[in-house]
Length: 203
Image 1 (tube, rainbow, N blue to C red):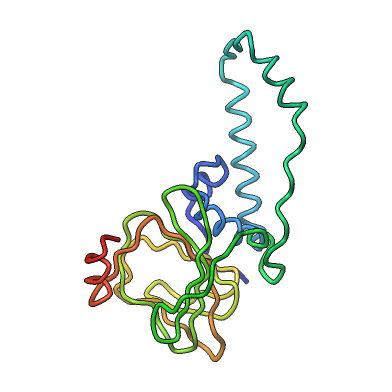
Image 2 (cartoon, one colour):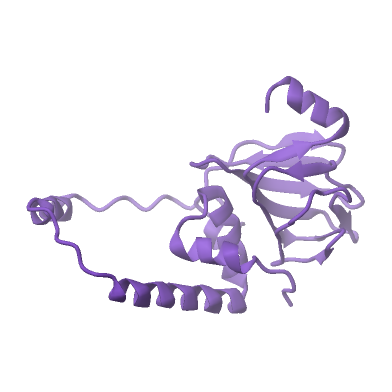
């Protein structure tokens, strides 16, 4: 059972294609496992289509047809190869970097994404927690395996965390299994010594 979902605002941004790439990948990972959110996205897309039907048509430029015909003659783009067959479909073709230690029992593996948000895989061992941190924008985390808990509840595979406040009570891995998550953020402000180091290097 999935108990934690994106907000309606985030689902709407995903449906309209305005969610930054890194955040959209996290949302897509959750949506692929959540029938309720898939239905919500389908409804939002249908609503958007109905709105477009009511928009007053605008005349195309005189060169629009020529440009379209040129693009139709272009060879189709190659489908990226599957790079991560062990990960859910939305992440299987993402180019991931190497694993980096980011604390005792915690590792991070970034991916290349366009836009203002960054993202990657986060793997934490049982009993370990992330550093206390604040948010400078949207942050999404989807659990792939294992479980964690924070001040808003417990999160199991498929659950999506979208905190609306800072993590004064940092996420803690619970149970006996490591917790693997996909995470993306528009800005994370670390606290304590890590926060001091973050400010020193200008991140």
